[in-house]
Length: 295
Figure 1 (cartoon, helix red, strand yellow):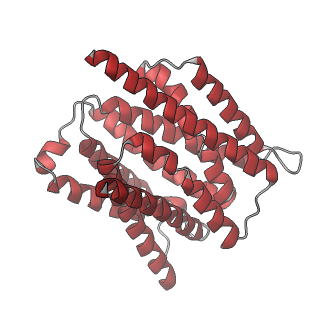
Figure 2: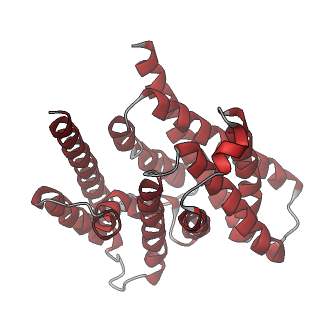
C-alpha cells in the first residue's frame, strides 16, 4: 500500500514538473533559438542518463550493449527532433493548444503499432481512434474561418513522439529499459551538440536561472517518472499523464495570457477520453493474451 501511494505521488510530481518545464521552455524559446535551448537541456539529460546507467547492476558496459543500435539511434534522433518541434510550437501555437494536440499521441501509437509492431487493432479501438481524431479536428477548428498552418507543428510533434514510443516498444523486445534510456540521452545530446552551437546566443543573466531550472526539471521529472513506473503499472500511470494538459493549460492561461475556446476544450476532452480508452483496451487485451498463454 505504501509503495502504491508513493507511486501516485511520484507520478503527480513528474506530471507537475513536466508542465512547469513546458512553461519555462516557452519563456526561453520566445527569446532564444529552440535548438540552443534544447542543446543545453540535453546536456543535463545526458549527464543524468549516463549517471543513472552507471549506477545500475552491470554499469555502463552492460547498458551500452544493444542488439538494435540503428533503432536506438533512430529513437534518440526522433525524440530530439520532437522536443525542438514541440517547444517551438509552445511559442507559435500556445502552450494549451499545443498540449491538447499532443494528447492525440496514444491514438497515433495505436495506428503505428499495426505496421511496425504487427499488432491488431479491433473495432473498439478503431472507433475510439476515429472519435479521438474528431476531437483533434475540433481543436484545429479555426476561429477566424481560415485554417492556421501553425497548428500542423504540434501535430507533427505528436507524430514524431508516437514513432518514438512505438520504436521504444520494438527495441524493448531485445534491450532493457535502462539501455534505451541511456541511448535516448546520449544520442540526443550528441545530435544537439552538432547543431546547437550554430545557434549559440548570449543568455541574459536572469535567463541563466531559468535555464538552470529547466535542466533541473528535466532531470527530476524523468527521475520521478522512473520511480513511478517501478511502483505502478503503466496502465495506471498513462491516463494520469493527461493531467499535464490541465496543468499546462492553467500555466498558459494564467501566466502567458492564452485563451481557450469552447471548441478547443471540447476537442481536448474527446481526445483525452479516446486516448484513455485506447490505453485501457490495449492493456486489457495484453492481460487476456498473458492469461491464455499461461493456461
